[in-house]
Image (cartoon, rainbow, N blue to C red):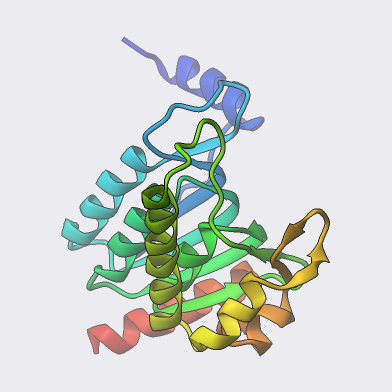
Length: 222
């Protein structure tokens, strides 16, 4: 049986502090960090977010009457397209107010997750990289493979356009822009750039994100 001393020691080892501050909150926060891991397990040295861990949490949040809202914190390089879309679709389907905040980076398939919430924020120094879908490893060089990639890319674009203020033409222009990324095509948006193009709603930090979520929760429950 674990004692309070054992718990304190474990907390110190994990978080670098003796006691985690405790308080009652009416919303829950989820972090999407590192690389989004899908059907293939990534090497142990990679910092990953496993979609099979996130999805049950989202279901539990939706079912829990004590939780009135969801805050999604992103600092991700992207990752598995289908896993990222699955998380994004889960967030969109929630009946409770949702707010997202991009800190550091919300790149690649992290973009659909960022725009999936009811309202989105991005830190002033945070970046979002928009580029075409790419595959790594062995690829079967047949027309069907490229058709599949096109269809997958269309799914991502459609989702982003439907859940943000950016139009399809502008997004495709950012996605296929040349000369803005070294040895690649695509665009890097920094803070206010993501807001100006209609991808993200507002520039702000954790305080602004929490304030907005609390306002949305009050509006729903009044």
